[in-house]
Image (tube, rainbow over all chains, first blue to last red; front, side, top):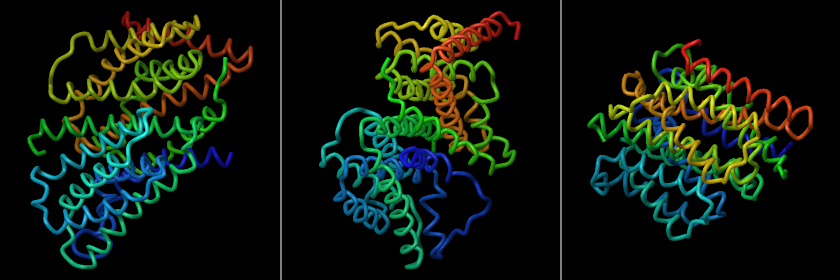
Length: 187
Length: 195
């Protein structure tokens, strides 16, 4: 039963937090930064997918890559040549697909994915004050680490199915977001 | 038939846990709630999704988890066509037909080769996805709508797998097969315009 709950949590986590709860604090405060990765649904899904993936593979080093890349993306948005939302969505699709497929991801690929997502999430975020930067970093870390912690215990054949299914949901969602972004002409 | 029962129980439970989260949004006219409700409120979608889960149980591993993995992806690809406004003929017919075929597969406990089951399920996913995708761009919050319908579809699969767990007992197997028959009948009614 404990295992059942462990399995349920990442799914509930992937499904739940996107819900609109009305106006959230935006702008330069700590909470504005903290909530950005949750408020922007593509950021949330991308970071959850990366966290689940790293948790399943038991990889920790890519977290440092994610943090460094997010800081770089935030400081130098021009480091991401495209409009940054599309790379976030692409990262979510890749991480979701990697979760869904029955292959073990090489460490280099995981690090590259973390770098892509970090850069894109950083460049697509706004944190005009040091407090907001602290909040944003905390938010990115919370989302990713929670997903990682939930995925770790599931990384075994029977329960790993849930992670694969969650990965396919995330990949499907990201594909639809891509179609929306492209057709709306606002990638 | 070896069923990873623990995994199935976990999956069913996770569906239960994930559902109540939707109660938080009101009628937002095109966001997460309406996306979630689109597959759930259309009986033609509901019966086909549940049938995917039921059939997966009879097919056993690896189809059990491959079907719910392949379906959302194929659905999203077709959904992208719908978003782009690329027409697909016979969408409603395809959706109704999916209920008939998948329902019959459950009724007769069909065990085709894995690739046949995957291709068939993926093909039907295309029709369902296109129907959802066509409604996406008009939504107030298309991203949330997309998430809602992907999650709702997945949870319907899980509901089917959960009900399919009954097939571990002889009487339960009859109940599951009967459910397949009912689904096929419902699909037939949609197909012929009776419902």
